[in-house]
Image 1 (cartoon, rainbow, N blue to C red):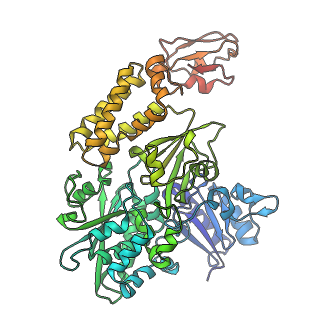
Image 2 (image 1 turned 45 degrees about the vertical axis):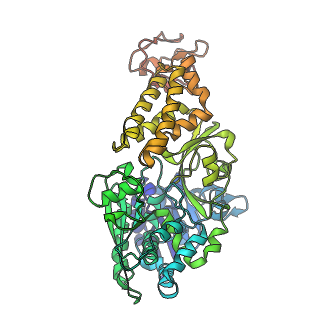
Image 3 (image 1 turned 90 degrees about the vertical axis):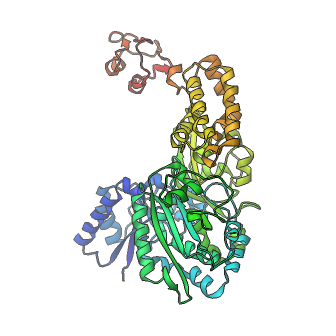
Length: 596
């Protein structure tokens, strides 16, 4: 029996920041101080506050050490674990007050959150089925198999109001109901979409890394509900930690009789296999994903028939994403009313968002639906850093839209975001400040979707390319007002005519930026200026003579030899030679170089 536990984040974010080194160092220090039999090291999933990683938490004291370095470990061991004295200098700064340490749950990042899908992430060892069971794991599966009929399970999910967290927001219970007919007589499948491809999104990956059994349990419940005995998890091969933990979880669940034949002695059979995706964004679309599982090129199929009727291997299939499944067991155990009590009338429960971009607290957050955007940006996120102004936030990744600062008080749910041309999507949330060019942002996301188009339908294959060409023309200073009109017309056409969700949503970043930031497009084509100073072809670097001290640093570091001048005299930039790299501005200590 250990007297204390040290939880160390082993998610991708903290691992990339060096948490493995911390674990090895901690093991050495505990052994050196004869504490290895008293202190247990627990490698967990993501705690959410990625900005402060690597993260080390000491329990039961609930002390949260942030941005921990290898050299900090001996101090934590000798002072806190050996002598019981908290190393205040390493504690997450918001916990430290004049009256002592306040609980982590009362800090701005955490106090506005409600963790349902993320309830075990950062709390348990994801590689231990016993720890999952210790938090109530597999109780929901036992309950449905021994106390509920399949139709009762579906009704609970329907009554909860849970909608798909993968993007479209389709009612989960309704999807299950569509596939539930003819149980026992037809081969059916349960699939999990873990092909998270949005730039800046890491919600599903974090759930798989921190609580993989929650997904396995939910898929088994879904299999019982619709009458399926086989499941598939389609996960990106570039998620090595998630894949490894899923493989461990599958092995453990089979050993414990929680997957396989005759689960809980009820006669119910269900097993799950992994299928690794190669990073094609289009395989996030349900029919393309199923086509890939079948061993074919990942391309979407026309619908109808929908997968609930004819899906994987032409059999009835349900497909939900990781976060959707992560809610299921809790809904079964705590009831539909409990889940429906959170959120809004039409958007129930919570939603996980990956908060990134120009924000102080990057990380993973889970909030009740209907939470104002301002709460996420200013309270949980800590606002835009470096004194810059909040300009917009992109939700829903390449499929979403940009929400301008004027809508910062909008409640975050499916209906409200759709009303202003954006979507909840899978949960990416990229914050932008005054230094971001919205035309360039639209171009960035379109470059991504253009590259990821499978090419099966003409509107997406050709249309996205034509839109990208127009944006490149505008950002290079060669655009016209007619190009803006043509861009808008083309975007509307592709949205209405593309075969699958990738093409249908590809124009969203363009349409939303045209709606809210049209003045920036006009500035690019009429004034031949980029208001944010981002588009290189429209920039010109100049030296303000009154501020230049003639230190020569700019000239010495200019890779194009475009700067001339003598010591202690104002320098000059030759615009014909300048490659607009910005090196001169970053080296100037007197603020004498400006972009125009």
